[in-house]
Image (cartoon, rainbow, N blue to C red; front, top):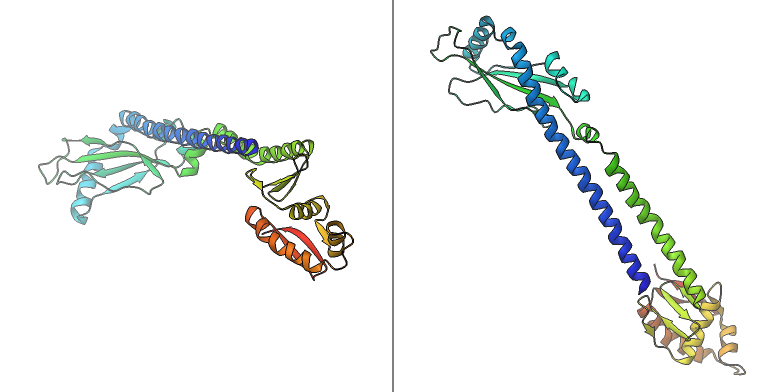
Length: 292
């Protein structure tokens, strides 16, 4: 029972370490993802304040408007901008970042076009330029959004995963080594206490009883106990028929039928209380083996 309790405590500790590592990693990932979005907003605002005058020339806006009118579809441009990239604090994202520019449709609905699922996008900045003369009385409005290509693995690497990975490896190490140490400790204690184990069945030589895996006593007749003790004390757990008969019924000329009856009645008891069974070897010997 004590060994079972120790094993359950170990399992609980490993599960808690795993849960902690995953929780820590998920928190870092979510926090890093939020920081990237904030940095995209800041970088876009800084870029707009510095370069908007160069981008939003009358000719550019007029061209966007004419193309949209001719094609009947919203005009969208995605471009890499050095100022925007330099404003991002995450260096690995700079080469895959950019700004998406689109002319707002005349119906006033903001565009819903999104980049691929691996991209994070900033909030939208609307820019109105009433100075441009167009065929419509409605002045053109440009919509700006910053973006960066951020697949899962890239955000994960940016989230400083060393700590969660270390805890995860520690939990695997504990879950692998500690059961072995507990098992060796249990065997040592059993040897000191006069306990011999085969499979999940054990023999206590001090109180002369057999026990199952839950340390419940297995009730055996004196002959059944003697035969099982012979199996347990044998290093190979292999007994010849003549050896059994001579030990259990010394001086009896023919004990084959008695031995057969003893084995037949003992088998279901052993199989019901352990993972062991008695195998017959061509009618000349018997072996105690584990069930697989």
